[in-house]
Image (cartoon, rainbow, N blue to C red; front, side, top):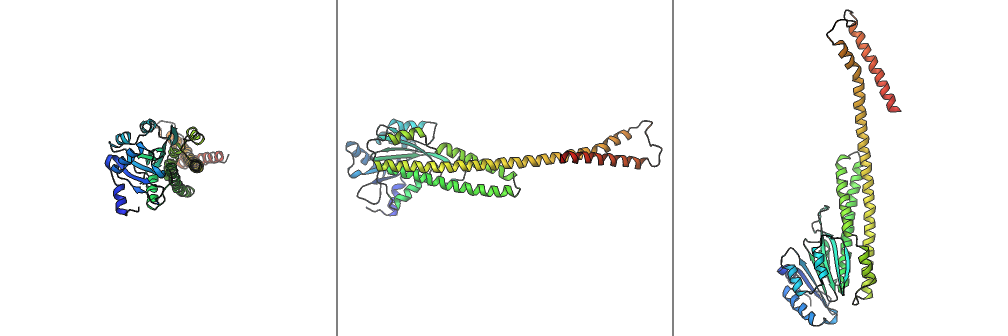
Length: 345
């Protein structure tokens, strides 16, 4: 059954118990059917009595900023304790783990209003069962918004694992967009460094490098957990779903390799910028040293002949001033020659 955009928006805008959106997927329907909180409660209650027919499943997406969200999930969704333990853990690294017949995943994605800042990254918690997918977050994320757009366009997944795989692929696509944006910024910084504007770009490169380091640390899937899932999947997971999940993880790996290469490029640019700054500092110190050396003879002679004591030479000579000027010029030329000779060496 196809619903109007107003009905879809009304169902998706539900904030009861933190429910952001809910969808039901039926095998005989091309479009996902929006679920309200009451409809989701009834559907979950019926699903606990008997498995849904025709491979139907539901997706519920919650906002954890709502104080009632976690309590509602515990009461009605019947999720394993591993999901709620993941919500309370301090570690938010990307991983997919198996807990009996469920998959518990932790994904990290950028905020919807991402501004190339390391703080614009948040976590999405996911629990996947044969007929139910529950996702929860605290800040709006791009991957979830992209998935909702795909559902409104009629691109519905066939299973809960395929929905998880779509989330991972949309997250990888968002990561590719970030890499392209960072690459453009690095190219611009490199052009400015080659043009001699180093001071303003050194800090910018450091910010981009911190962003990539945090993205890699949070987005790189834990190999051990992923290995266990791929080699010992739940019994209800089909082979096609397993292959799709493996393909999405390989796509993640390719993106992370590109990210590591971009980090190395930024590191080389930072080293080149630091070397150029050090060279400029050394040049400034050399100029200051030369000026000091050139001023040394005149300071010494001025100090000696400026003493108010008897016996100062040339005090009675009418050519004494010019003799002293000649001595100062001679000593200055010799000192400058020695300084420039040292520079050449």
